[in-house]
Image (cartoon, helix red, strand yellow):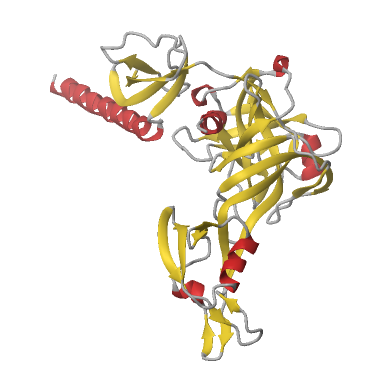
Length: 400
């Protein structure tokens, strides 16, 4: 009898330990918030059954015309509490998958400091920019109360200062600051200088992820456009898109990421860009799009490991679908590396070696839904890369 009781107690302890372990794992790894299609309940594709139980004050997730936040309890086997999560009911958008390359032209909000250097003066080497606290990556907004929008404007203010102090308002580490810049006279050409190099615009190529036929709004790239010298996200004052033609492929190899080369095929703008943030580039296209090509946006809980496709353009024939495998999913990640994907399509592998620079933004489609976009390549294994959830991009693109 005692032996049977010991076995029972040991089994019970082992069972409870495993249940707590499973519950703790999901509490850590499952997201704290979800979108749920209007009129539907949250369903999770987990190895062990987890159900979302609404708060007692909320009996169902009813259809709403705008997102409404509610709280639910995730419970293992419908009984054991795992964690409380926020649920937003939404009308799942119908989006047209992109895959087309597009040109990006951005005019910065202010001018970005991309470098500093010393100026030779009669009294020695000096760097006024560093002396007043300016650093690489800072964005200068105004000089002596005048809004600065170009390299020529800030250089004009410095050269005409006669060595008098200039009040500078700038952004550093996402904080607005103020400082006094005092230019010095260069001994080499007798001009006033500050020992500073700035950039006011940039141009590049990316891939369109989606377009909303109801609004003509688009999202692309899946990651921010950053300055090549500073690595900082470029703050956008205004921007535009342009048509692009891909004319060359540099095949990727281990340790050497490949690249798509293209040219702007028209001087005319095809749309406007109003946002450049950590989830990509967002704006509005001028030409109307065909709504019949739209497919539903897939929510993150609908995404599964396994086969999927990316839609991308690697030559003049336009966008095509290529097979990939979703190897892992980080449901809790709120950044741009939500999935690890692997190219399995023999045709794409033979031409590009896998994922190459310029594919960023290529839509990922699974089970007839637009679930995300390619964002980065793994340099040591170009067959693999990262993908972002489409809902992350779409939500960011709507918050203009």
